[in-house]
Image 1 (cartoon, rainbow, N blue to C red):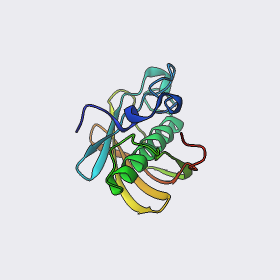
Image 2 (image 1 turned 180 degrees about the horizontal axis):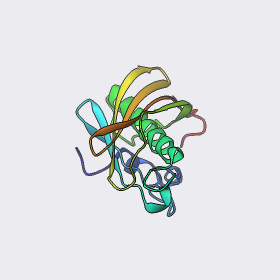
Image 3 (image 1 turned 90 degrees about the vertical axis):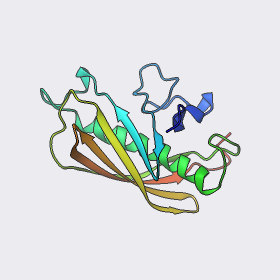
Length: 155
């Protein structure tokens, strides 16, 4: 893994996302990295991310799966094009569809580990599969269809 996360390559005007924007002071600051052919993200839920006492809010789980997937889609597109992360024109992805299966309650306390693989990469679409673990237990699985942001809007 490198020291810089995928999201660290986003230019400042793209770094304000609630989930992964490094410049959003109230955001989650999700960071994703390559680990071989998988991408990995570690996220520490805070006490205010509670659903019921002792367990993580499901919307937060969906959010971290979502942002980890779109960051992975961007990095995968750069990798497929044999281009360095952050090079122009930007390859940024947004969510077209998000499906999350909650397999068991996710305990609040341990860090969450997200591991993503690519199901499909084609043209302007990347489908990312994400598994979310707490203390080694698979708690949720997501499938995210990511589409490249239109070129006219990306700077």
